[in-house]
Length: 377
Ligand SMILES: *Cc1c(COP(=O)(O)O)cnc(C)c1O
Image (cartoon, rainbow, N blue to C red):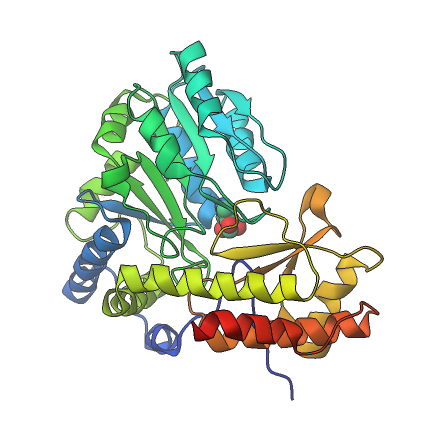
């Protein structure tokens, strides 16, 4: 017998409340029952996004929501700033390129957060920029960009700020209206505690005005057409019914715990995880670490792939390695969504054993002790 423990930055564990609700016989979506459920989900999403505007839902992975953001607010030949510095920042650039958008990169080295002054300077140099695309929590490097500061800069200009909040919404405070974020993309399989397959997109008033002008081709991901149906508690096409049913449950859990407590819990778990790995003599990769995922340098002389593989094969602990050029150089442990203090201890205990097995000098229990000291505060 082996138990599996999911510490990957997506998909993340799904709580029993959601699993059981999704196991019930399928609802038909063109019914009053579904409409009542969807009405509750719409309200719950407004609370989670801290917005008075509607949050759109599409059956797609998170990248679908990113593509939807691009095609609904821009026109062919438009110029955009693309904050990179990781796989997901780069993805914004790739989507822009696919649609003929002139994406001007703002590059930061992997592991570093973008300096908001760079964004201000780029916007001053080029007032024609129609949109700024950024990641909030860059899952590939474990870095948290300062979206609040970037938003202060962008909202004084005609440009829209489009944020990949896929590993930040439901993890940290992200008041969409108060910060003035224009398009905010989330995904079901991260902090929303659901299986993959649902993307959520918050759209500001400023962004809706751009949607009317935007001329990029779109069909499935059409914000205006989708909103018409959403206002009637419906969706334009067959929704991911089971995921919406599960979302009703996880939004209830989120409301019961309260956003402020959720933010505190994630901050505490990530702090404990960071304390644990550094107590083992390991080095953090991110200079401004995200509370969703902890990225750690693979120590010299140890095979990074073997850490991930041993954790999985011997201990049933699923974590993520590095992506692209970071492959073999870092590993990543998520503390996101349905996670609590005991999960951190499980991950660290398996990590200690794994490192010992691979020949890294580790004093068994030191990581756990440091984490427990943070958790006890
Ligand atoms: C997971 C993730 C995505 C979306 O990836 P999908 O595989 O399309 O769901 C996008 N951005 C970030 C920061 C992510 O962590």
